[in-house]
Every structure is written in structure tokens, then in C-alpha cells.
Image 1 (cartoon, rainbow, N blue to C red):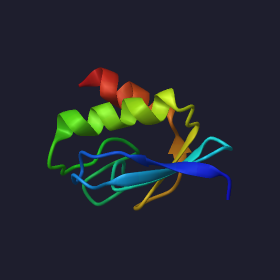
Image 2 (cartoon, rainbow, N blue to C red):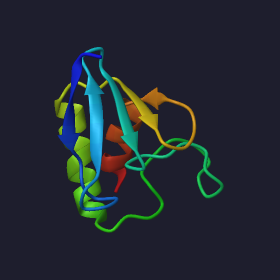
Image 3 (cartoon, one colour):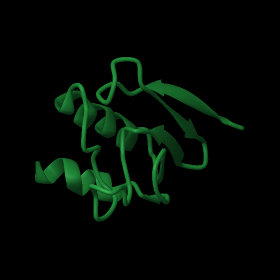
Image 4 (cartoon, rainbow, N blue to C red):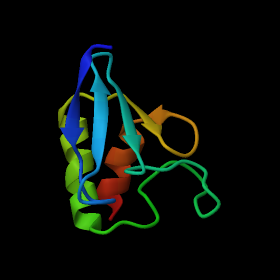
Length: 88
């Protein structure tokens, strides 16, 4: 699998994301989709540092991520997170 690991803290201090050269990102709990407390894709409900979550998302977007694969729920376009960060 061609890609790299990025340190993406916020949800927890040691969180990482796997960014594939294809533009797919496996982000764990940095983002969520359709959890019991969410109606659609977006930012995590709980995080140790929400400001850091937003910086980590900006890092992913700057890395050219196109599709987010969260730990919970279906994949979704990275632009959804861009809009979520801008709205907060």
C-alpha cells in the first residue's frame, strides 16, 4: 500500500492517520459518520482537544486527501470535513 502515516492528534494525543497516495485516508476516530449521536459525517463527538482535531483535519486536507474512512460509519468526501471545520 503506497502512502504515509501522519500524526493527527486531537481525538487523543497519539492519534495517527494513514494517507494513501490515492487520496484515501484512514482516520480512526478523527472523524465519524452516522454514529448514534451523529446524523451524518463530520467531526468527532468527543475529543481531548477539539482545536487540535481541526488542525489535524486541515493537515489531512493539505495533504490532498479526497476520501475519509472513519473508524465508525461509511467513507465520505473529505470536503465534508472542510465544511465542518469552517462552520465551527
